[in-house]
Length: 329
Length: 174
Image (cartoon, rainbow over all chains, first blue to last red; front, side, top):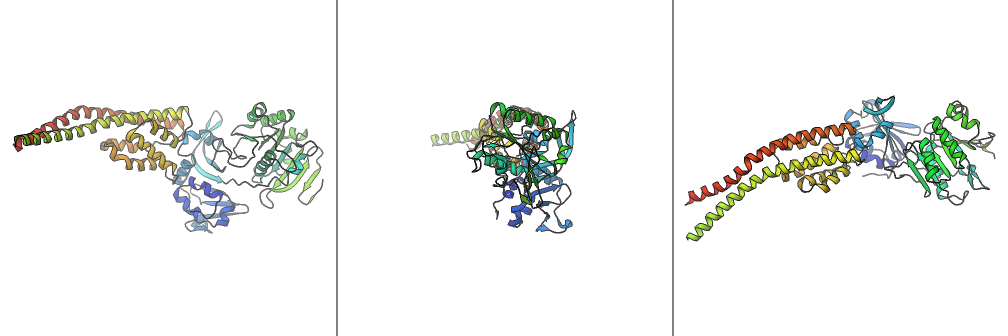
């Protein structure tokens, strides 16, 4: 049925037949680069990719919004039922968190009316939009970065913080670093035990507890587990040499990271932000940076597509080890 | 000649009696199927209360525990759900019901109830889902009560009618 063996093929069974036909008309080269499929109530069906977007209509891609297919309530309801495998009752926690992970590691973000309980979101009702975010493993994304993160004499990995604006390729880099460190790389030698605390199921893209993306043979994944609870749990029971987690931000996450660092375990993590100054203004993170907990800071951007490596900085003295304009060690 | 007539008469009476019995059996079976549907809803409640099984798995689990046409209806629905053709749970249930309805010999009102049952699957969070199942159980209990009354009234009548019908035909033929 499909011309291309792409991520789109994997999300196809989760779309109602009405929407499947629009996707089928996509040119294969576009199908390969689509990053997001947006379904918003009463608004056009839109595809997004790095540096572009397109409306979908009866005859595939259309150029005028008026010609685009408008998503209706039934489309959203049916799609939600399909992504929950006809079992909304089994996805309460995911619905509360606002996303559902699909086989293949793809994620569907939800937005709608939030029902609150004790000051926290209990569930989203009346879903108004769904965003299919397609997971693509970029093998080799970490190969360029890894040499800067290894203390060659000891074969140790430096505590590393990856910094980039949203959709800058942080998670892709974390995933590939996990794979390289776990499986072993020439710069590192034998692989090391890696623990991933995957609070939002983004790094390993686990579905029913099984990682759907390659994160290495010596990697254990704590899926959908909060960092503050997952990191101590990892330390106690899974003896990792490296813990990888993403999107640090809360005070309790930072405490857990400090505890791991003091236990002699390497931490590789990521944070949203464009510059170091921006991150230093966030109270929870500033203590980590001011006390130089991280020995390497990796900056990414989308200037030449997601995952553009901008700079690698030595954490304590702020020395640039790599900049996009020229390498200097 | 007399022996042949006697054998013919016996054959007519037996056939008519068996015909009456088969109609009487439908009343009995309706009660049994409705009891089985009540049991399936109990299993469903237990599965979603104490586990995190998804709807296709729950249907398969029900089919393994409840045999006959009722179990097969759930198995068939699970198969449609697993096909991932984009049908929702209600559509899969109705499709399976269409395939299997002849085997169940249910009355019109009872079939309507089973159609309604298709509307509850996989809808709402756990609390809502349990509420809908409980409501459906209530409706099934009422239908079961009516089916038992019907059984009480009609089961014996049809057996006797069969027998008497056979005798009547024999007398008329004499």
